[in-house]
Image 1 (cartoon, rainbow, N blue to C red):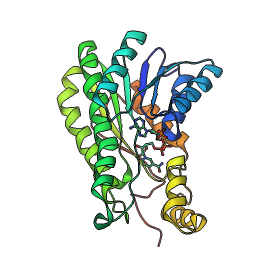
Image 2: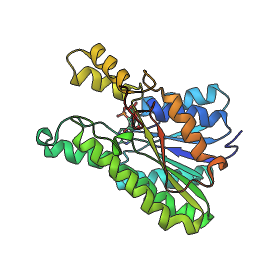
Image 3: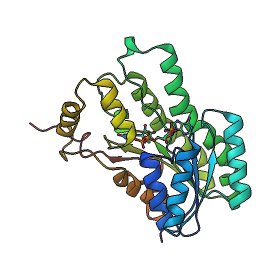
Image 4: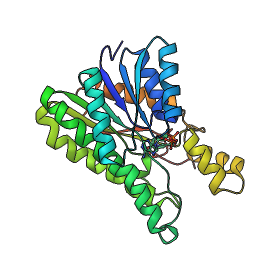
Length: 257
Ligand code: NAP
């Protein structure tokens, strides 16, 4: 029970990595506040947690809307009394080289991926500062460290999140708040399934080529990232501050000959 009685808010926890993390954290004794755009998906995560014997509530909010996020955080604190861990996980993809990227897509991906980290953090931090304790986990990506074709705006946002995590860590270290970033490689979630189907003529071939670029020879699973998030959320990582944690099947460390 590495998170016994810890209150954890996870954004985008109706699907993929956020959902797998919520389920794992519940097994470790955490009380979950599940956020998602979709009430149906968020409530399904809550249902599965309750079936496991865990505790969770769902709070719908769009992480790009300040009034909705402020209301969500206030309701979480009113209902649970505190927030110990914030996992800024919600994010969307954006396909295209820079010249192919429309201004609309640029703004949309920037809003969800960067503002969606800014706003929940902005409203949760005063509570953590008051309690002189807290953990923030920001979802970056290994794309912050390596170039990948036709991912201009997505990589820009994930690089920004890594840089932001380091600056946040400096500001909030005096309050015993730790801020770290997760850098996954390609993880098999609905997010990746959609982009395989939408951006390649042959999704099967694309999947095989992605597998080849990972030293593991396979994609990661949401549970692989959830375990890394658990490490960052727990006291086992108390000496990790402002750090990137890679869970990428070796994609950033080297290439096969
Ligand atoms: P996913 O299955 O698509 O889950 C993302 C969740 O975020 C969805 O439930 C989505 O809700 C929610 N969301 C999107 N926009 C939102 C908003 N404005 N407000 C609240 N919730 C919102 O994706 P995933 O693969 O688990 O990705 C989770 C995070 O990991 C993302 O930040 C992604 O960039 C990052 N990541 C993923 C990979 C990968 O290979 N999968 C690799 C590196 C990093 P709806 O479905 O209702 O829109």
